[in-house]
Amino acid sequence: MDSRSDEPELHFSAMGEAALLCQTATAGLDLSEQERFWALADDIEREPGVREVVPGMNNLLVMFDPLNADPRALAALLTDRWASGKARAVAGKIVEVPVSYGGVDGEDLNWIAERAGLSVEEFVSLHAAGDYTVYALGSQPGFAYLGGLDMRLATPRRETPRPRVEAGSVIIGGAQAGVLSRTTPSGWHIIGRTELEFFNPEEAEPTLLLPGDKLWFVVKEIKA
Image (cartoon, rainbow, N blue to C red; front, side, top):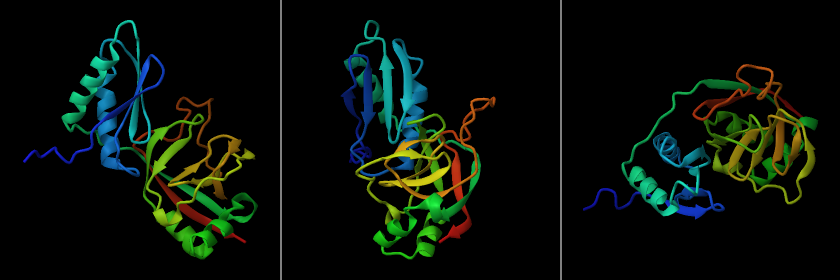
C-alpha cells in the first residue's frame, strides 16, 4: 500500500501570468501542513526564474519571471518537492500579550460570547488559553495571521466593516484570532485591546512577530 496515498496533494491556481498559488484541499488550518509550506518556500526560492515566494495560511504564492520559467514545469517541480514530505519546524519566540477585554475597547465581546453560548468569563478564558502560532504576515505591516483559535470562539466576520479600528485591537474573524498592528478599517470582531506595539518602522526589526512565533494572550482585566 502506498504510504503517501492519503497525503494532501498540491493544487495550483494561476494568479495572473507570473504567479502560482499552491494549496491543498485540507479543511481548516493545519500546523504540520504549514511547516511543509515553509520548507517548500525554502526549497524553491532560489530556483531559476523564481522571483519571490510568499507563504500564506496553508498556501504558498510563487512569483516567477514568465520569460524564464514555464508555469507547467514549475508546478511539476513544486509537486515533486512537496511529495518529499519535507517540513521545517520554526523554533520561534514566545510573545505574551496582555489584554484588557471588553469595555469600549472590546465592544463586541458581550455579543460574541452570547452567540457562542458562553459567559464573558468563559469566552475570555478560552481565548486566553489558546496556544497561537504565527502562520504568516500580511494584510498590513506587522499583522500576524494566527492559528490556534478554539473553534467554539470562531465567528463569521461582520457584513459591514468598521471604517476605523484602533491599532492594538484584539480581534476575531472566522476561525482566526489576531491583533491589529495599525489603525485600519476592519470587518473582524473586537474583543479587547493591548498596549503592546506590533509594528514600528523606526525599529531595526519593525515587526514584533515572525512566522513560527508563538503568541499567548494574558488577561489583564475584563471590563463591563
